[in-house]
Length: 185
Image 1: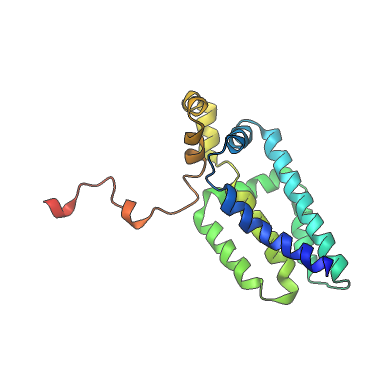
Image 2 (image 1 turned 120 degrees about the vertical axis):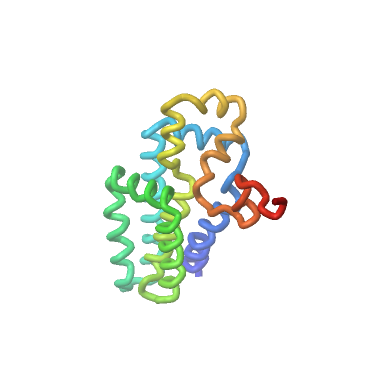
């Protein structure tokens, strides 16, 4: 029973964290965004914490369901994540390519219903969660050029907006915001 509760907590955690912290303007999240943008060591620590959480999930899963061989695929993904550079490329690729992000999310939703691929779906969900909070190439370039650095220091909420501006499609009511109103002509 305890193993089932722990597995449920691991499954719910990506959804709760993304709902609570995505586009958050809280001071601790501004510090997090700043650290992730400035420091490669902070991004490496972030990847290592992600890997530890995934390995802990695998441990809980295999302790509750001994003899399950479906865990091998997700364990292989975790083994590949030991390379920080490779994981950095993955997270940046998911961060900068919306289509890849959505495709992977739909794949995770589809495979969660296959009993032997459950751990793979949870692993993919954690990768998607990690990509939500990973800085894009554009944000790091803005930081390195220094143009936005003074603005971000004065207004941390601008960093949050800049940090998350590429994770979602524009809403239909914003689609023609740059064009003059055609009906007025």
